[in-house]
Image (cartoon, rainbow, N blue to C red):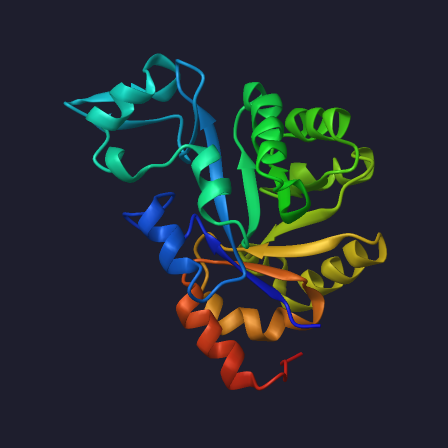
Length: 237
C-alpha cells in the first residue's frame, strides 16, 4: 500500500495554516496537517505559534478574541476555525497537531460534530496532551511527535498510540542506517510511521524512506506527488 500524503500546515510558508494553503494541498494530498490553538474567547483556530508579531508587539492568541485575531493578524481573514476545516473538507483525512492541553475536549467535540473522528489523527509533541487525548478518547487515532532524544523515552510509556510522527531531520544526527533501523523498530510495535520535515530536502530523502513509512507530512504536496508518480510504485531502499 502506498504512503499517504498530508500537506504540512497545508503548504509550508507564508500562507501555512490558512484556507488557501489547505485547498491547494488537497489538490495533490490525501489530507492536511494543521495546528490547533485556542483564542482568549475559546475559539479553536489553525495556528502554529502561541502568537504573532503585529503593531510592533508580540500578540498572544490566548489574550485576544477571534475578532481581534481577524483584525490584527496579517492572514487573519483566511485563518479558519477548526470547525470550519472539518465542515469544508468532508472527504479529507486530517492530522490535528494539538498545541495546548486546554484544546483537547473542544477539539474532540468538534471532530465528533462533523463526523471526522475516524478521519483524523490527533497528535502532539507534549506527553501530557497525548495522555489527555488517550484518556478522553481511547478509540481515537493518537500520534506522538518526536522532537528530540527526550521524546524517545516516552514511547514505551504512552500506551495506546496509533502513530509516531518522526522528523526526517533525525537522519542528520544518526545517519541513514541507524534512522531506518529505528523506523523498523517502531513498526514492530505496530505503530504507523508519519514522516515530517523541519529543514531537510524531503524530495531527496522521502523516496529512500518510503519502505519504512505509512504517511508523509509534506511541505509541498504538489512536488512530492510528482515524485511519487515518477517512482511508478517503486521505492528506493
